[in-house]
Image 1 (tube, rainbow, N blue to C red):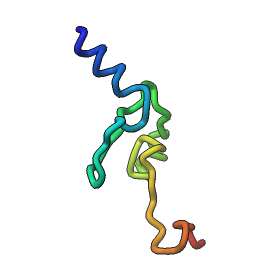
Image 2: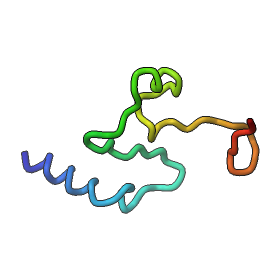
Image 3: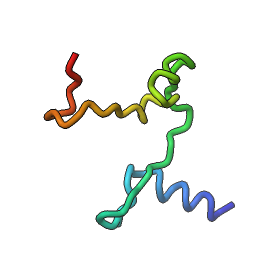
Length: 67
């Protein structure tokens, strides 16, 4: 049980570990009770989690959607 508490305390103080090497992928721990979309919104967005909804709008500066 102590190892679990050590790991949790080590990675919950910051979004990134202190010594994250360059060019290495890092996925932060998911927060408990995250916000979620309704089932219809989730199907439309392709994800149930708004934080993961990162639509691609092309190579426009800032990724602004053109309507």
